[in-house]
Each structure stands twice: as structure tokens, then as C-alpha cells.
Length: 354
Image 1 (cartoon, rainbow, N blue to C red):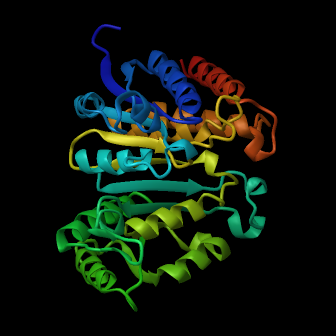
Image 2: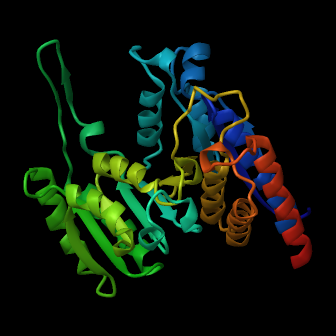
Image 3: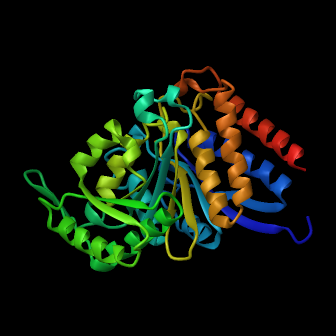
């Protein structure tokens, strides 16, 4: 493959089902690389709970250095009951890597390909296609914390610059979609939300081709399950985005179907399924790798391999439509057999295209 496009990917399989779903996503990317004329160099690194056990920290220096040197990072999942309450947890590692890589924008898309899989009525779910753009390194999760036996507090703080840069991400994304941004806040109660609303409105003036509306977070949560088609791009802060994007995961039928991208200013992005580590089924070959595959497709898009990304998404959709479904979708397929079925469709598809 002389002269082939070549990319380096840092793999962080993590905990629980993370290694299983990462394995299937990576195998799909390797199959696509052969067929689409690019090369991927990937290497695994400890992160999360497994890193705490082996290195005493969820984010070892060697892992962070490898991520910084890579073109992209693919993460499986982190967390588990054995690390709850420790001085450092897998989740603190997740916050740390986002901060260290400057990953301020989290993109979480959800679309309904098969309304029959959604727990919502088909007439409500059909055609829903929503992108949540979540600010990722500000707000309550990163604010000053005070914790005692009788009192505790978390500071929610945002600056104008932080709101401006995430707003630009949302408006640019809307230009490539249906041209509508819904900014979600709690401006009737929170000072940080009032700043958020003012700044978003100012940024909107630079995008006259994109419609903007504002919505309180409680009303948005209700609308996501009663009228999801009213949304195109949802722009919101860290905590609200975390909650709303998980609520959004019910639309297509399972949290196991969705991936996410965390991006910054020019450095490597981090791509991961939005589900957790699911320790109750870890090691049983029962996990749904579709979310990790969607994360891999988003990774490929970011690297400029749009044709390969589209082929992966279509292969996953075709596999599910053919009835090859994991338990979360009411099927009997294993994680590995689902992955094999997707790779088979990738090979068939690219042979036909050739």
C-alpha cells in the first residue's frame, strides 16, 4: 500500500465491556482500511480502572503521552463498583483526559433508523435525528468543590469564551444538517445560564442562515420523548448535556447503538460509545458493539475518511435490519457474532463497489 494515507490511533479499551466492544470496532476499521486504501496503526494503553490497578492512577503519563501523539483516540468504557469511593476513580481519569487534550466539544448524534426498535410510539420516533452539542470541560463537573460531612457544594462557572467556542461548533454543525439550533439552559434560575443565553444569542448573529430558539432544560427533557422531531441540534452545557444525551439514547432503541466524539482545537479527538462499562455482562460476549462502531465511524469522519465511515454505518444498519441483534435489541447475537456480521457486509459492499 505504497503512498497510502496512514493514521495512528491510541486504543483505550478500559473496563468492563470496553475491551469487547473496542475489539469489534477496531476489527471493522481494519477491514475498511484494506478496502478503502488507508492504513491504521493502533496500540492499546491502560486507562480507567484497569490503570488504577496496574499503575495507581486512571490516566498514566504514558497513556496521555500516547494519546497526544496519536491522530485520534478510541475509548471503550470505564468504571466499575470495585473503584467506587477511591481517592481516584475511572471517572476522574475521564475528566482529566478531556481537560488535558482540551476536548471542549462533545458531539452525540442519535437517529431513528427503525421505529419498531424504539420504545416510543412509531409516530413519535420515526424520522427523529438529533445532534447534542455538549460543552465538555466547564460547568459543575470542573468547578470548585467543597465536600464535608454536613455541607457540600459544586461551583457552576462559565466564561464568555467557553460559551462562544461551543456555540460556534453547534451553529457550524447545524449548517450541515437542517439549519436549526435549540440552546438549552435554565436561565430562569441560574446566573450561568443567563450568561449562556446572552452569548449564544450574540454568536447566532454570525449565522443568519441558522434558526435559533431557547428552551429550559426541563421542557427540553419532556420534548425529547414527546416530540423529538422538533430538534435538529441541541446546544447545552456540561451537566445538562450529559443527562439529555443519555435520555436521547432511548430514541433508536438502545444506549448500545450510540457513539460520541469529543473534539478540541486541532489536537486528537476522543471517540467512544456513550454507554458505560456494564460490569454485569463483562466478559460474557453479550455487549452490543454498535455504539463503539458508530464512534469509530465518527473517528473516520474526523480523519477525512468519509466514504469508509458511511460504509460502516450502513453495514451496522443493514446487520440490524437483517435481524442480527444483540440482547439489548431483543436478539440473541453475541458481541463477536454481530461484529463478524458487520465485517461480512463491509467486505461484500466494497467488493461490489470495486
